Length: 58
Image (cartoon, rainbow, N blue to C red; front, side, top):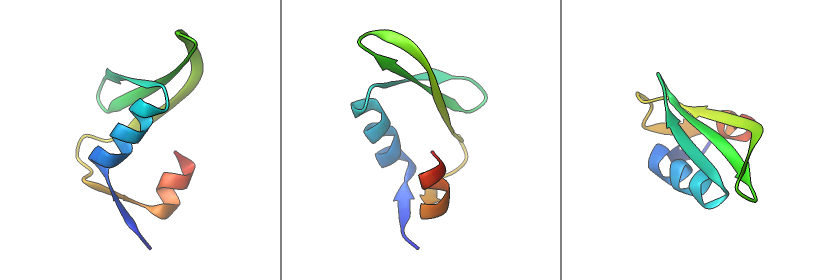
């Protein structure tokens, strides 16, 4: 099982059109054509790496 660094995941989400909203966790909201959509995902502040199984759920 591969490990993926949190910073690399965050950079990838930003490139795909997600914007971060700092709450208890880092909440990423997807924007399409400048408009907010209902698509969101979360990244925990305390996790340094994620495995393949969790990453596919993101």
